Amino acid sequence: MPELPEVETIARTLREGKGGQSSILKHQIIKVKLLWGRTLAEPQPSRLSRLLKGRQIRGISRRGKFLVFDLEGVSMLIHLRMSGDIFIRAGSEPLAKHDRLVLWLEGNDVSRLLAFNDPRKFGRVWVTDQPDQILDVLGPEPLDEGLTPEMFHEMLIDRKRQIKPLLLDQFFLAGLGNIYTDEALFKAKLHPLRQSNSLSSDEAERLLASIRSILVEGIARNGASIDWVYRGGEFQNHFRVYGREGQPCPGCGMPITRLVIGQRGTHVCTKCQV
Image 1 (cartoon, helix red, strand yellow):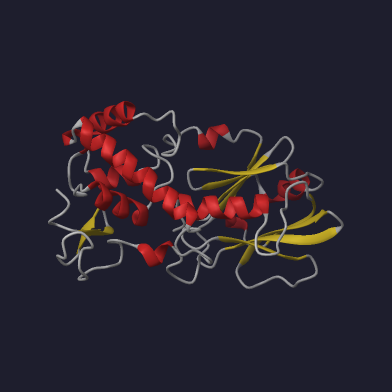
Image 2 (tube, one colour):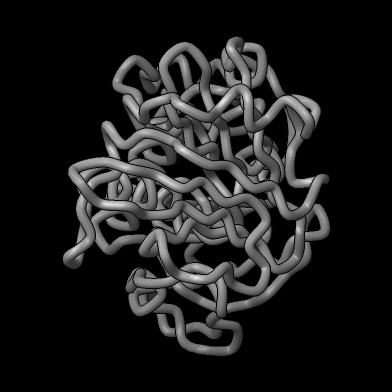
């Protein structure tokens, strides 16, 4: 599942352009086609085209793992889930297999289409004039400077849960998934089975710094591409523990162990992480 760095990379690419592809900001939506009804969480499919046609893309951002499109009075939120991705193609190109929602755009005398492509059909799209009802329930952004080490420590103490499942909880902290949680816990030298309320203030500060460092590195490397879904990242070439079961720990040389915690595969050095 794409995590914060992958979603941030997609938002940045759509917003700023990349690799010969220009930004889609200020493009107008001229046509809408929904190809899989369950992709749309809100509104009813019969209302979608009327809500979107004629609106201009004013902004593209990220909240947690959500892509957020500002469309002149309404917002379009996209959660990629397991296999979703966003493609920009020439407006004359045929639709592709697994396209679930397609928007045709015009801007700068160019016709293009934006396709939400989702082979496994788990992704969801919301079009709403009240995005805060969906986004405000999420936890704080880990890269938000307003989240201080003291606040983070209090959050950990209040929850009293195993640290890895807690970090994966989007209502606790928005944007982390399996990869970046494993990597951050390794960098912080904390075992994923530790109880959150057992962390000292120094350990909490070290964990927050590690989360931020790993996310910043992930964004700088355009995220991680580890299967056939997300394209263009290179962070997978720099994993310290994730997916490295049986390989030597980069810190001590002990073999990396794979555990299952909260039904999620978890990679840990049992010597370095306590």
